[in-house]
Image 1 (cartoon, rainbow, N blue to C red):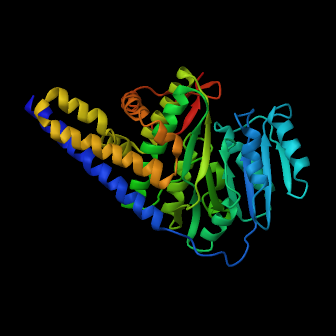
Image 2: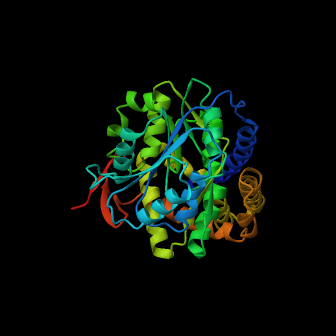
Image 3: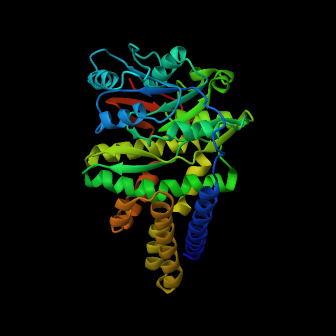
Length: 376
């Protein structure tokens, strides 16, 4: 019992330290700013599509309306009868001056079909700066300009964008958005603060073509579920700088009901555990509220430390959602934070078990090194 109490004391105290670090990390991130744009850098935007996400038309429109000099948009679907095709054609007609091309890739020969679509588009893309962005992303009209400013530093090989999660009407998606905007972002900024950027965030990544080619292109990524993390890690290991952009994007996560949302969370947890196992174990310190509640149950006399952990979590959450993301909905849903924190720790624990995931209607086996294969 004494050993368990000592371990719990260390964990709760560590969670307080972690929460303080997240605030320092936010301050460090907000101080960064790219230089003014000296010259336009042509950019190719790559959009892999599969079906019609909630808000897809407006998401894509935000890229057609970029206030930037020279760019093109490539959009890829697997089949010509994909319902996203009609939306793409509508936008091409609405913005005839924007160079845009729809590509039908056919059946993917890669385990990761998103990577297959990206690889197909890269072969056609004209420019050296490649902005790869998911279909559920909505951007401000200055995204490409900000990315171009950040690539003016020749040491930068990859730029990845932080995001504000925007949920639909589903309670479970709103809960997830609160977690992404208070817990996930805190982890990203703290990792950047302590170790620098040696990873990338999947929703929007920009990379130099020559850097991608030197890393064997998408052949390197085709077998990985967390291809974003692997790409960022390999770029950083090659000596090129990875930058967390100053430009926030919106990640429109839709309105999933309970079970699909839980399956999605488990897929993410199991993938993260294999991509960075030590970091996944270290996430125990991010669960301030569950640790504080455990302390109150096991050692009621530690109420002051438990209260401190709860306050630290609240301040960290407010810092991320309010100060960094300017996210009003998360502020109004403050009462969801304890529910999200308790669900988050349960998903984190579940992530240590099992190797099967579901993704886009198919079942896969995750291998120990983060690669995955179709489950027979």
